[in-house]
Each structure stands twice: as structure tokens, then as C-alpha cells.
Image 1 (spheres, helix red, strand yellow):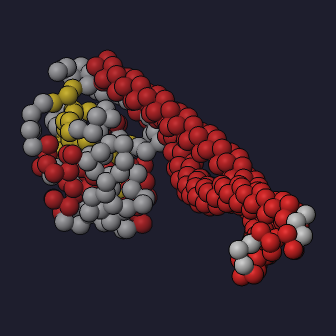
Image 2 (cartoon, rainbow, N blue to C red):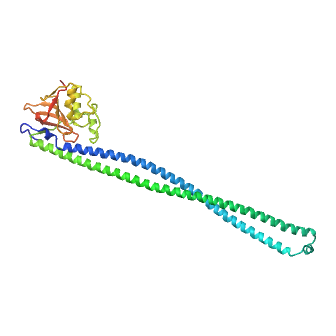
Length: 359
């Protein structure tokens, strides 16, 4: 705690903390990187869906290929079986023909003489003729079946060839799609890394800014007051709000920011805080008040709102009292980017003007 060493003079440009513009510019970059990362994430999801479709199509072709291969293998086996059957029947027919040739050298009288009777002679002759006819018919059937099997095999072979070409095409597309997914996810991760890097730069600048405020305050006779564990009555449940994203209060202000606390104090004291969501930066409050017919003055008064216009967002605080020496006791939030409550004693020139919500 530092005692007041005289009138506190802080210029508007000093309060701006030259870091504000840098932080604002970097935050713009972060927003762009996050938007690009989100765009790439959506693109990667779409590419992944397309990849899964290609993989399913490839697997379906492979299933058809497996069935065709099984059919081709069965036809190959059937052809081999029928070739053997044809060879066996041809061998049998050859033997019969040989027998007929041998028997053909025997005259009918000699065959009849060697037979016990005419009936046996007739049986021999009919048997040879019947067996020869049956073998000849069987060979014809086997040949026909062989031709059909070979035709079917050729057709299946063409299907197999076509299916293999289709599979190769799907595999090529699948590989290309996998590369696109990996590339897109890599680009997305790169933007996430850039976002993290820039957020780190923002945090560093905020730390430098907070240190600069404290340094300026100490050298200018600034006094920071302790006490008030209730943080000016600010709702405890709002203290868990994130500082990296905006969670709006009932007046459209981001919780744990200077504007939210000050709006709360106005509503708590007068019950007439307007809804300034969407145009609620601290450096907009003066014009907002004038547009709403609320008095604005260069003279401070207890129960008014001090407005500082410097910086990207400006700053507002609640004036608790005007002290005998002309200094002001104020309460505020997020003066040092910590998102917390503080009470200061400052010179009235700390603010550009004051809003009289109480009239």
C-alpha cells in the first residue's frame, strides 16, 4: 500500500497502456486463426466421411472379388474333374473299340461256333454295340459340359479382371483421400498452435500492462485500498465466468469486466441500468448515456460512474466517494486484467467524465 504523495496526474494516453492496441490486434489474429481452424476442422470431418465411404466401397468390391474368385476356383476344379472324366471315358471307349476290332477279325461263323448257342452270340454282339453307344453318348455330354464350363470360367475371369481394376481405383482414391485428411488435420493443428502462440503473447502483454499500471500508480502517488471481501457486492456466482470468452450479465456486459461490475452497481443503487449489450465497451458509455438522456459531467460525485476513454476498450469504475483533498475512492473490476475486484484512490483527472445515473 502506497500513501498519496500529492495530486495524481495520469494522462489519457498513459492509461491506454500502449499494450491495448497490440492486444486488440493480436486478438483479431487469434479470431482469424480460430475461424480458420474451425473451417479446416469441418473440412477434415467432411473428408473423413468421404474417406469412410471410399473404404466401404472398396470393402464391398473386395467382398464381390472374393465371391468371384471362389466361383472361378470352383469352375477351374470342375473343368479339371470333367477333363479326367472325359479322359477316362475315352480310354474306356478305346478299349471297347479295340475289343470290337479284335472280335471283328473273328468271322460270324467262328463267333457262333465259339458260342454255346445263338443266344450267347447275340448277347455278345449286342453288349459290345450297347457299351460303345453309351460311352459315345457320355463322351458327347462330357465334351458339351467341358465347353460350357470353360465358357463360364472365361466370363468369371473377365468379371474378376474388372473387379480388380475397380478395387485398384478405389485403393488409389482411398490413399489420396487419406493424404487429404492428414494434410487438412495438419493445417488445423498448425492454426491451433498459432492460436496458442498468440494467446501466449496476449497473456505476456497483459502481464506487462498490469506491471506498467502498478509502476505508474506507485510513482504517481497512487493508493490501492484493501478490504471488502464481498467485492462491492458483485454476485459470487459470476466470479467463475471465463476471462477468455464473454459470458453476458443481465445488461449485456461480459462478466468480471469493468463494465459488468459498474452496471451492477448502477442497478443496485438506482435500479435503472439500461441494456447496452452489443455496444457496451467502457469507451462507449458516454455516448450511450447521452443517447439515453442520462446526464454526463466533468465533475465527479459519489454514486457516479467514471469513464476513461483511452485504449481499445476504455475503462469505467464506480465512484464511492469524493474525498476532502479532491481525490476519488473508486471500486472496479479487471483494472489489471486479472478479472478481479480492486479499490483505488485516484485523482479526478484519472477519468475523462462522469455519468450521473442518479440524476
